[in-house]
Image 1 (cartoon, rainbow, N blue to C red):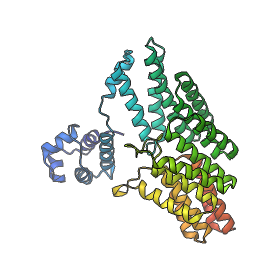
Image 2 (image 1 turned 120 degrees about the vertical axis):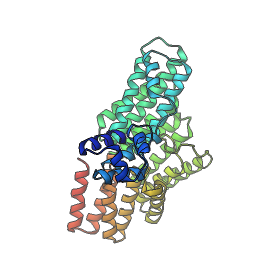
Image 3 (image 1 turned 60 degrees about the vertical axis):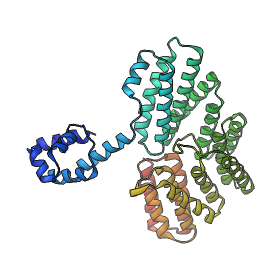
Image 4 (image 1 turned 180 degrees about the vertical axis):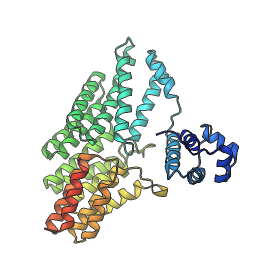
Length: 390
């Protein structure tokens, strides 16, 4: 989408409105509007709303302003174009590698909310640059650093691909990450490839494989964060297998390990586990174990921590599954209206992990059919779920 300034100039020309006339209509200083129109200043919400109304843009200018403001918040402390230029010229200095590592870190922090197609595309572009460097003569340490960078990008891309329903592609990417981890001698990336395979198996109903992969990852993990995540996957598998004692044991072990870890500066990083994420994992395990009150308590915590001022949701995928959990609990306790409302809200989001969402939504669907067989609105939820899978 075009920037606010570009959109504003286009609408002014289309409607034959001069900058002076716009200043009169919007009640803003002409010089201030000129700087915004030429991209020298960011538009405020107030000026965007006023210009939108003055030009009859029906929200187009307000949308452009929101995107400009979001882009400014997400800007990095280095110039991407300069980094690309240095990479293309085979500069593998310490500063370039550090900037590359920071870029990958930020991409991992965008995983919870960014459009999956865009995130996959940008991550693949960076991976192509790293691969180009790997085919050029560099020092041994630099080569190892590039392998690690490529491995981290492959982990991220594989997760996004699986979110999009690309099972074969995600598994191929996971295998590539595993190979890169072996080449680089990086146990953390290797452990995450086991975690990814455990996640894939979980959503495909292969619960024994989940336990096997989780145990294998725990054996080699040197990162407490990935160990906690592996324990969470193990707990969720045991819950589906009906082994409640094993669920409690895995959750307790994970919570104990998590309690001694410092809270991360960037808990939005996909490959970092913090207490907020632990609520999410516990919610899933308790729901499956039939501990509805505990599941609902954790679900409400997940939703509350996902919210930011003005209704902005920073973890839409987690919040969607939390709403489905509340829907399942509502269905089990005989509250059809709440169950359907929570289910509809969960399926309405744009950023989703399709396999995980469908897995939990299917639990709600099953609970609805069991409690309310033949209910028309239950059938309508089934139809909505099928549409979400397309």
